[in-house]
Image (tube, rainbow, N blue to C red):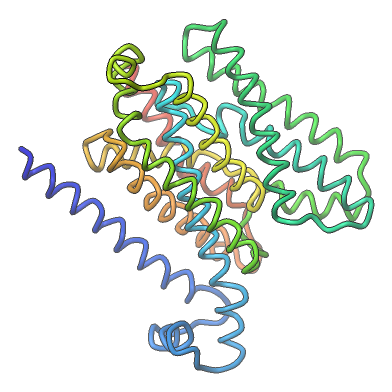
Length: 336
């Protein structure tokens, strides 16, 4: 049985790695300027090639692709951590209103800074999104103490998301026209316009958070078997729960700060990864979720920018089309 399980894990990671590589090449090639695999290799590895194609790859497509990989993986891992924390397979940053809280505070900060003629830095965006995520998470935790049924908790999270979205719309109504354009483009959810500076900040924040989450694999494994079991295994429950909340909030806040609110990735991908691997072991599921989230977001971003080209769809709309049916299937299956 152990040998079969190891083969399954190896095959699962190979499938995800191959899909990631194929989608990486496909995303670089897709667009108004088509490139062969050899041209892509020369531009990326040898840093040679026709100047226009070189600039398109290095200044537009590569930063966008890397952002989709990093932020898609971060959102998926954040969803897995929240599902572990609440013990609910449909808990996620978008459903619980955490992304909407981050969106609200970022919107307020963006409008304030733009009205003063100040450009928002990456650090300011992340801090604003983190503050919003923590405010929403605080409300969710307060509700979780009063509500015992997890279905009611999810409904409360959705309501918090609606309230945050309503306040955001109210604020946008009284913003200047130029501010509304900037805010609208961001609030729809998109990886376009990502710079190398954004990618560098994302890489540092996301990778540190992922390493910390991976180091918590053993306590997470114990926590999955119940709080009492985890306590008996020597896990400090209070410190553990705070760490889990902070890590999931940082990951989801980073995604919201740079790409806007993205729906269903944090719910659908962890479920798909656990179904693929037939295990919930964090030491396997965390890296699997990161790869799965990267593949899912690369695929959705490819569709968002090519299906109705030159018109680009919001990434959140595409992830909802593919993610929502998975969530519905999960709920129906759980009910059965």
